[in-house]
Structures are given as C-alpha cells and as structure tokens.
Length: 93
Image (cartoon, rainbow, N blue to C red; front, side, top):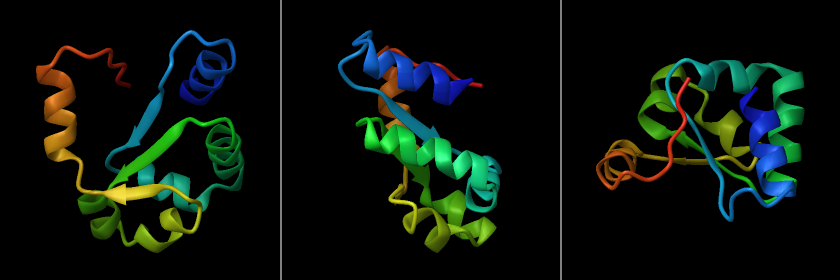
C-alpha cells in the first residue's frame, strides 16, 4: 500500500517530495523479500527517497543488505522527531 501511494504520488505530482522511512522490524522484511525489493527499486528509480533507521538495521543485522539496495541507512530518531514537531505531512502504518 505504501509503495503504491508513494509511486503514484510522485508520478502524478501529488507531492514534490516523498520519503519512505523503514523503521523497526520491516527492515528485515525489506532485506529478505525479493518482491518488496523490486518495489523499492521502482520507487528509487522514480525519485522517491527511501531511508532506514540505522539503529534498527544494525540491531536486525541487515544494514549491508539495505545499503546494497541503495537505501540510505542513517540514524533517524532526531529527523523523525523534527518532522513530527514541525507538523509536516506524515503517514504512518
């Protein structure tokens, strides 16, 4: 669902910028599931920024696998807090 909305949101210019943040256990799913990896590749190819929480990825031992998929892996606690505090548009699932 997220990938479909992000893809269409970028393609149809609903939003200028779209970023998907991979947080927690979904990082392991992204690292292992080929179908999800294909969705990620498609999004990145269409200028959707994909990033993952480094603390989560390190804990789940998937940091390298995520980076190999061109996913930015970085500490995101402060960045996410700033998004929330500044009332930027945010969808969570």
